[in-house]
Every structure is written in C-alpha cells, then in structure tokens.
Image (cartoon, rainbow, N blue to C red):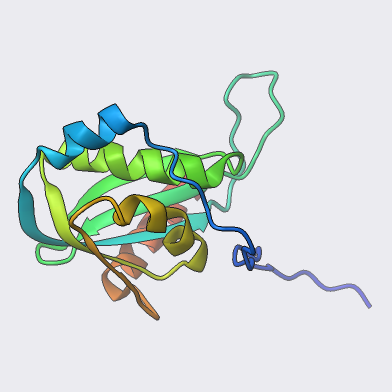
Amino acid sequence: MWYNDYIEPALEHQTKQPIDLFINELDLKRVKRLKVADVTLEIGSFFASEPVQSEEDDRPFFPFVVIAMNKQTGMITFIELLQHDNLEENLQKLLIKLIHQLLSIPKQIEVESGQLHQALIPLIAQLPIRMNHVEALIHLEDAKEMVLSSMEHS
C-alpha cells in the first residue's frame, strides 16, 4: 500500500568529541568590548520545507533556518539560511554576527535544539551569556510557521 507522509529530518546526534571554538581571538576581543544588555533571545533552528539553490546550475538543498527573537518584545531580530556543511562553525559565526548586529551581548539565550546548544557551548564559555536548553520555544513557533508559509508561497 502506498501512502504519502512528511518526515521531520533528525537533527539530533550524539557528539562524542567536544566541538571546537571556531571564532578567532581578535573577533572574540571585539565582541567582549560590547556591553551586556538585559535581553533574552530565543534562538531556534529547523530545516526549510522548500529547496533553494545558491546559483542556477547548483544542486538544490534544504537550508537550515536559524531565527532569533527577543523574548521580551516578541520581535524577530535575526533570520539566516545556512547550508548544513560546517554547521557548528557557521552557527558560532552566526551568533557573533547577531551580537554585532545588536551592538550588545544578550544576557541570556534559550535554545531547544540539542545540536544548536552543543555547537554554541565553546563560544558561550568565552562570553558573559547564560544559555538555557529548553523544551520548547513558544514565542518562536509562530515565527517558524510564518517563515515556512512564506517560503512555500514564494
């Protein structure tokens, strides 16, 4: 019997080795000069439901979407699409980019993805940020639905 079904890709994997810090010392020093803001960010990640291409002749891929939301205001502060290659390095660089965009270091971040949590541990250890691994990011669910529906309609 034939049936159609949507299967969520498994992102969680048990990492036996510790993840490296991919941010160089100069970039860390620049970030550490910024003030710490009393802000909590929810950072979520998921695979997009539609494939994209970097160039017309490139092989399509399903991008890894990362969204950051200010928990106090409910405003989306950051959306980025990543390829799954070098994901840990790209996630660390993304957090540095987000901090530069905010012009301050968030006091706390909340993540639900184990992979995102593991990737950021080496960087968070260098910064005055408290990271919480939570069961669900309630505020981000609406943003995720909005992003997925806009990708389907474009």
